Length: 135
Length: 165
Image (cartoon, rainbow over all chains, first blue to last red; front, side, top):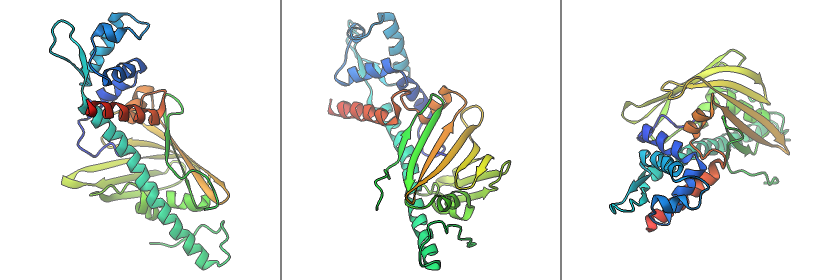
């Protein structure tokens, strides 16, 4: 159960966003770009991997629309794109919201059910739970 | 409340193929079971998104029995899902398959709900198991190992810094 079928998010793009975010190296790259644009060489420095390997990750991020290349033709610095992340965040928020809302209403229902059983049985036995009342 | 059990919702990823949602309720487990398995009660709490209303809520809660839930939303939108009950242990355990009408992944997911009671409070642990890590990730779409919370934290951080930039 989850609220996947509603909302107007572009699902394909969302898939790409989350697939891109599922890798720790790519998350680290995004975290680095969050503090400002950087060239491929600069992005490679903190990782124990080749520039080619980092480039592969950058390609995935780029395809997901999470980063773009700035104008500077020499360095081709990458920069973070905020919008897909905002969409991804919105989706996660909805998932949580769906369950929080549903369970919030379940709290209310359970309180009512308890009320109904205690009215029926003044001592409020907590095992007296099956109140068969057709609605 | 006498108990200090966490009331807040927890979403975690216990394995590569799973999503787990944990929440406790101030009621004994048979009562929570009823609220979870009787359609007229389920209709009162499950998934009432703003602008959406129930279209179908049928549940034949026994092993091999089927369930179907569907909602109708704005502009003729529909959301439906259903499946078959695999294990039914009243007050303890409910296992069912789950498939959306417009499923975007292969195969059925399997949902297991475990009810445990302590000091009059019931904790519901719902575990959804998908056919593969990719499916799980596309459903939950959480950074795989770090769980949803850190996924949020990262996104929050990224969003904060990009809007500040």
